[in-house]
Length: 443
Ligand SMILES: *[C@@H]1O[C@H](CO)[C@@H](O)[C@H](O)[C@H]1NC(C)=O
Ligand SMILES: *[C@@H]1O[C@H](CO)[C@@H](O)[C@H](O)[C@H]1NC(C)=O
Image (cartoon, rainbow, N blue to C red; front, side, top):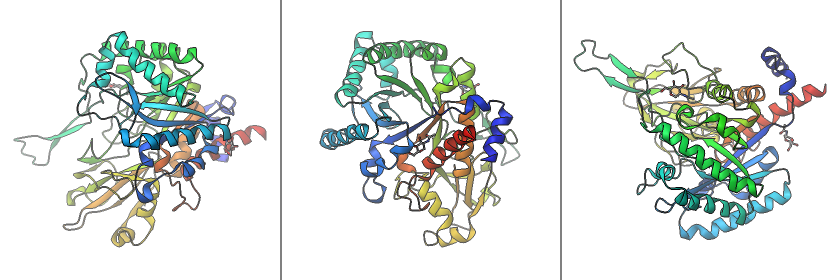
């Protein structure tokens, strides 16, 4: 508590920050409910999170590439499950009348090999065709009784830094780092205008019926290129910033670093915009009110494999890494671990005894990491993640520089409390931070 008072006093924004209207936007990824076994987050378990969420974003609806109609994730055989879940979600709204539930379209899940550019094509389509998108989205919101729509629009991502060996260099290990500032979309300006118009039409349709409209900025989408912030301010109720995964083993296989640092740390060769503070301030400086911005907090960590050449200090940036770690049973994704899996990895014997004995755990304001150096032929591991300390710092930051937080997503928090002994430790720590601040005001 003392720490928060101090933090707010330093920021000079004490009064503005002690306002009870802070949002906690909780993302629920429907696909996490379709996982088998231990990884399955049921609606019953979901319900335990709801007292701590002001908004629930139910993701993700996807879009048909040929006619731009929005529909549910999963194919026809999952329709029944979907109907059932939607009915349960609706019943939550009766139980938690304060909770706002939004349906989200897009996200990282809507990868469509048949129509890889469909979100760009929708922008370039005629208004007549866009109407299909808008009307089908509106229909889903209305039919299933949601409070509004969240648009997690897929834009081309900025390029990760690439590291290339320099041929012919007499210093054999010398590598050149390209900063990832290359143009990925020569028509970005045009797409920005088209996106604004699409959002404007969506806004007209949804607000007419009293529905909310929010935007999710997906990780590594460059806001400068695609978001006309002053205009969007008039069209959307709030914006959730995907301020994480700045570094991932998929994008940056050859070097490991903090995936979601709060601040810029220039002691290493990092890009100045790859941190929470820059992204939040960017929106704010462009005229978007802080109270309508939610700072993204991840519940997962990213795991790289280490080689002999990665050294054994673990201090990021760690070089000569060997891409993502193999998938875990719970998340089943290369290089990604949920909060309880990280917790287990770092503390429990049995999973990998060697890891347990030799893992080093280090704290930092940029994030946390644990690692195990490679030994002989066996690869090491480096995992970067947001521990409760980091989450608390981010929530404190959000109280001053934003209107709340957006938690991505509930299914990767320790929703069973297997490690933390209490369910949803990350979500609860956000609530606690906000609660403490309100208490400070009352004293
Ligand atoms: C924290 O959670 C409690 C219990 O559900 C809730 O009453 C309270 O409004 C939450 N506080 C904040 C600041 O969101
Ligand atoms: C977008 O990318 C450029 C570099 O290409 C960078 O200077 C700028 O800060 C980025 N904007 C955001 C909001 O990250």
